Image (cartoon, rainbow, N blue to C red; front, side, top):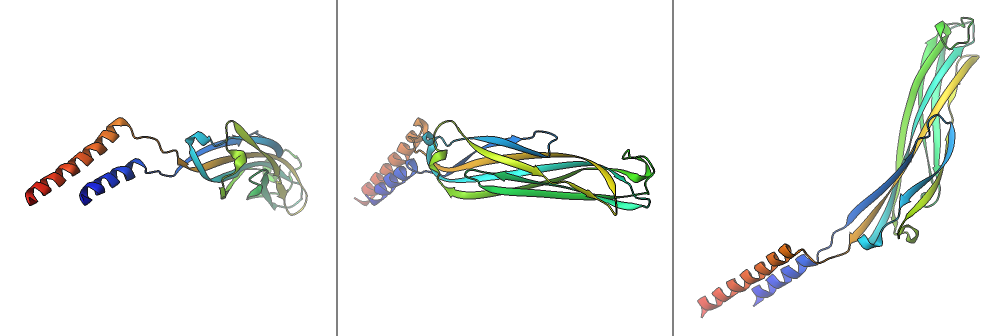
Length: 221
């Protein structure tokens, strides 16, 4: 009888097994040339019909690109330095900021008399690019993120490009800042009945177990 009970216990455990799963949603914003911007990101809530929410993780990041047109106005050769920088702040449940910086330099000659960002005294530097990303979580299940529809996260981006040399210079700078954010829901799916073929297979296991038990009983009679 112990063998039969073992088969039945195996059948019950297989039909009641639950596993953790993850579902993610994301949103991004790329406005083009802009040294600063504000944006409202939109993400899907967790659908409670999928199962029981265990934890929430946010991943977020920014991309930065800076193009520099520079002109040395000094009567001597110098090295021009271009630095692209930006900071992106997320509000709401994230409440985090992230920054990215990148730089490049170029040696140019003495001012050639024409501030056209060309010739011996001019330089076109870039695009100078940088990326950065981070995450917050896992956080405990947040009630505001459960349900139908979407929720929003406000964000603000601030560019901080700089250009310098050993003396005076003229500069024309174009900055592009992109931002993105995603939410990942760790959850335990709702346990549902097994499909019919799987159910029949488990019944077959039980029948085979009972048959084996009967044969052993007859042999021992």
